[in-house]
Length: 394
Length: 123
Image (tube, rainbow over all chains, first blue to last red; front, side):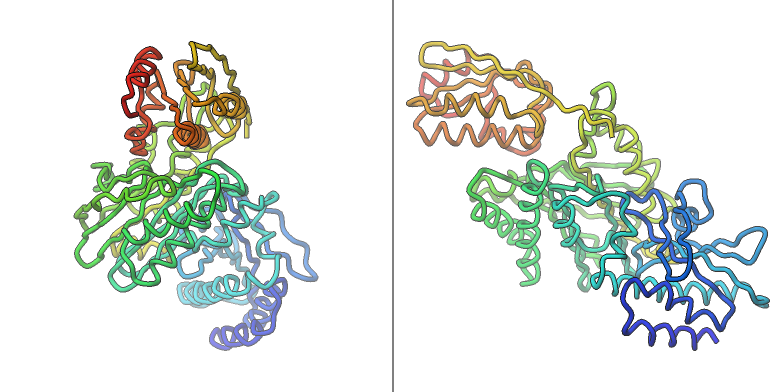
């Protein structure tokens, strides 16, 4: 029966518009006596919003904090209601958290573990289909928004990879704030064979001007990386692109790095950016202060030797932009490196999935933010461990 | 969000053919406008000789840093100079972190900045 529902959904999805997906999901589930309501997480990762379905009223949004749906989302798990046959299933695309599906079943469930497992597989397929259908309409973008996205935000968001990816060797996850008006911050990653390449960028200024600087650097880095060039060449490509493209003075800081997941050798170049933190056993054991050069777009022939660090299985790397530590509170004081270390040690450890650790870390920074409008604050976490990857699916 | 835009006021003091510019407040995206205008006014001097006294600047972000780099570049291009005096810890940290302290040297006093510049020392 479940097999037939999966095939039926795949078949129905072929010619469906994005706004028809919720309806087609329930068409496929109907014969099983199962009904699903699909919720997508908003960009600020605070509430889950129901995907509208034709002929049905759209339920109200559900807060992440303090709800069953939220708990399923946070922990990437399946949760059963205490009083009725209702299940909250975390919905992911690969390992990117998209939201939660609420499953109601009208038929007798003989083997609950088996039922939940089938729901997880089915909702996993829904997650993949949502990701596949997103570009073809605006509805899946609109549901995830609580306010207008600025042009700078649209530009950068369209260029960024999904926030989270995991494979057997590692998990990489990122979060950007402010979610709707991101300007100069960007990140990217690529996992090919045993090599994981990842970077963060922070362009000077704000708004569309900063987003254009970032987009230029990001495109130059990808162009170089896809020619199998090393991080030094990628750095020089980004520098040259910014310098030649814009007539006014502008620059971007950033860290470009590559990790060999067979050996644990991490190579990195730091272009005027706050150093990455290395966490081991739940503690920040050092800042990676090597590989320094000036920001991209300013001075030629400024290459420095790459920084090299040997990391251990289970280690975590935290890259961030200065908007994180420079967020200013009501008293005008900055958030500061010490507070970031404290928060990182509180959240980035143990069994919390990487994107959830980052969500809490990022909200901790925002909670402090009372002062002048926030600069972009981006966090990128890389966990080199097999266990981390296993925490990424229900 | 509690948006409280930052402000910056600028005072100037002429010492012979040298202009001492004293911004006061935050040098960031929201507030650098008045400083940019003041710099534009004095960068047309022939040649521009400018000391930026940063003693009253509590905070500088990437926009502030960009303005500083641009003004220094323009001063050099016009055969003059622009030097930075008395930056606070946050500013010195930003310059060290970005490794731009090689290009923007901080002087302990306005006097020291002028003296070394007039003696023809490189920034």
